[in-house]
Image 1 (tube, rainbow, N blue to C red):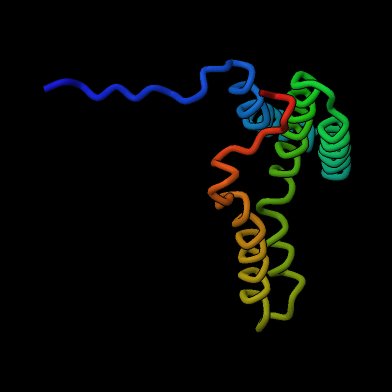
Image 2: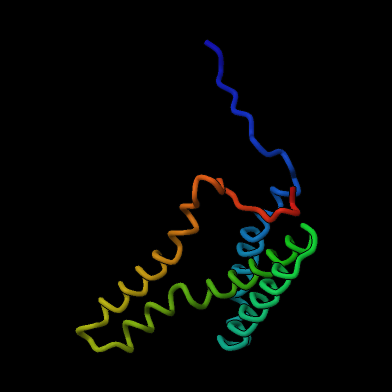
Length: 139
C-alpha cells in the first residue's frame, strides 16, 4: 500500500507570506496590546488599533506591488490585535450592561449574530473566484 502524497497547489513563499502576515501580526500585537492598555489605558490602545487599521487599509488600497500589500496587511494585523484586546469581550459586556435587564441577552445575541452574518461572505466565495482571491498583480 502506497502513501498518499498531497502536493500543494501554490508553492510561492511570497503569496504564503501575503496570506499569513495578517495573522502573525495580529497574534504578536494582541500579546503586546495588554501591557499597552495596562500602562496607558483603553483610549490610547483603541486609538493605536484604529490608526494602524486605517493606515493598513490605505496602504492596501494604494498598493502597487505585493510588498506594499504585505506591509498593509501587517498594519491591519496590528489593528486587529489591538481591537481584539479591546472589542471582543468588552463590547458584548457593555451591550448587556447598558441594555434594559429584560433586553440584555437579546441585544448580545443580536451583536454576535451580526458579526457572524458579516463574516459569512468571507468564508463562502463563489466557485468562479476560488478559495483565495488575490489581486491581479500578485500572479
